[in-house]
Image (cartoon, rainbow, N blue to C red; front, side):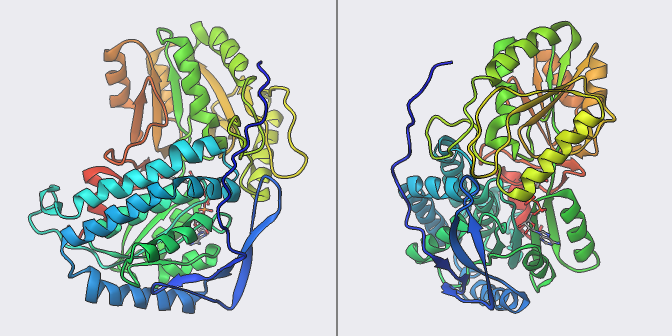
Length: 472
Ligand code: NAD
């Protein structure tokens, strides 16, 4: 492997020592605070106010006022102008947001710079375009907003998940109360500052940092709709909490995607896709290709080339532009990944990790490949949400589909083959919301994303995603 000199990112964003809650266009203090830690160093980055039920009620009241007096009555054309402005400001401050995201989340700067922030901006541009064309989106001639939307997001793509939630909600004429994840509130708070800069009317966007209790308070509050992205366990609790109420709900939950490599696949290309599928963002990806299903006749070849490639991945400082795998987001997530990896060893799977040094401080996990995995093992069934790949083999296409579908989840899948007919055959049979062919982890604001089975319901992105924020 080539040795590279360090290429540290030089931009440093202005991170405040303390952030308040963002309610009705202003930052306000709360009864208690919590700390946000840089997972690569374990240093405290800043402290932030923690929202309680009373704060949630204030934010919902502000969002209601804004909905009734300003945002609801505003024309789509005017709303679109605000969204375009937000998108442009995000682009202008892209580098600063990228570095802040890497610091707070631990993900490599090349991913925040080239994926998270540009894709977040794209979501605002895309939905800005819809704001004055909703009557042509196929949801009726005069689609109406829902009102106030409560949104709860996870820590794996903090700014991008915010964009997936806020952009369509605002474009459709709703106002928003959003709770970012407790370990990654920074870019949501910077986004609140950006809303001030864009002169967004007060109350249209409210940002309430906090942990699970704050999320539950948002779900239980007087909102008209709940949009949640996170684990299936919490999604289930939210579905129960809103059952019997008038609230609409969409749930984007976990996954255990199969990435299927047939014997006629372009192997080098497939290996790149396998690596991207599981090691992108440290494997903290709901649609990660965490189960590799490879046809037996090419399995040895694929595994040899895969290990060669994984051995070249650079693990370390998220702010080094050469880094491929950054820090695990939190001590709790590292513990979970470690426990499931131990379970895999205990159940008899063979584990392989490349030799690589890990930094002494911070939360780190080596890229890991399990072979000899049986379908009944926990590492084949449970979402690990880390850089851990479980490899299974198959002999026939039917067996591949049966194994791919043998999970409670149904978020995504990948198919690698040179035959177009096999792609269509497989896509028809895979029980997954998204199926990628000869690629993996590709996203576009115009393309709907969402799950089947225990991966949730509702779509985000595209014309279909607008439906979740309209009274149709
Ligand atoms: P999590 O469910 O623990 O937390 C997600 C969010 O919910 C956090 O903001 C958390 O504070 C909040 N929360 C926790 N308990 C709550 C409660 N009782 N009521 C309301 N809110 C509550 O998930 P996580 O560990 O932050 O994220 C990882 C999970 O998210 C994985 O399962 C991943 O697959 C999933 N995810 C899904 C998608 C998708 O689009 N389908 C995208 C990203 C992540």
